[in-house]
Image (cartoon, rainbow, N blue to C red):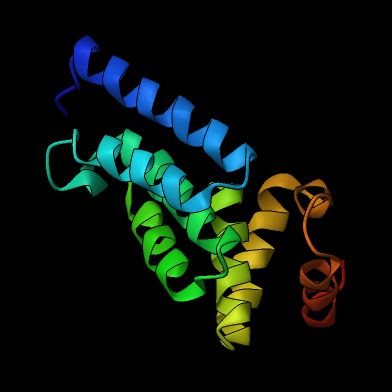
Length: 141
């Protein structure tokens, strides 16, 4: 697989760092703009690149925090398709949360269990307790 140039990585990194700062400030829409700009620097399809998993999951996180669950799920589904996406506990956590919010409880349980299996109960520590409570209704954990 070809690699991105150092110059491209530097641009992506700068945009992501700014996006992360904006996320910490609760400026989700503006953070999304930074992540989207970084994504455009990756040759298509972005799902072929390891950087895609971070960018799509960051975009999904921004949409999730904006309570735009359908858009978040779309981004997170793309993150799963990237190298390193399957098995990434954070990606599975957010995708499970989105699916639960969208009323897809069976799919939510599957994704939340993947998150739990990959990172343990700790991955739920900073999340709304309803997600772990839901998971406990579906599995003996």
